[in-house]
Length: 115
Length: 109
Image (cartoon, rainbow over all chains, first blue to last red; front, side):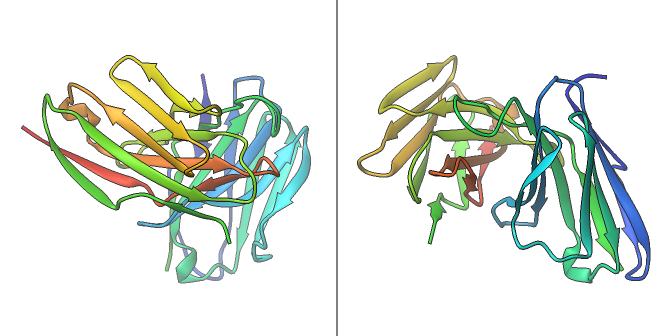
């Protein structure tokens, strides 16, 4: 495996379900990110982890709960979601969060539909 | 507030040249990125500008003017595979990326 992988690629869940999204990066990066992408809207940064420590939480509702057990893995636990949470959830990683270019590498995303 | 503006959609002809503009108003500036995103796929990094001027990379070039809060992405010799969304993102004083909504580029034969 190379780059950034995400599972599942597609997820349909009811509002009372609990599910988790998984992200794994094979690039040796130290920072990982969760983004929400809705149609025709800018990418919304949700969470940032740097060296396993959460450094950003952009006022994300508590029904989204991130977990970063190590620098290579990132999870997003979902519970009691709303239909407006339906979107593409993208994971990304980068060498760091400040300093030089540090472009982000994205995974293919999980297309989430909340029914 | 922080804002990134780019056109919603553009159409161009195969073999031609197209320029996608991006204007920004952010709290500080620590670089500007361009990403390409094909439908249903992950965004992929295209270019990075932190100093004024033109950065050329094959058929793609990116220009930055910090005093004007302006950048453009120039695509030459357009190919059908260039049909995609192009995302402009600016890193602010906190090194947080602020994203534009993207420009959908449609290439016609």
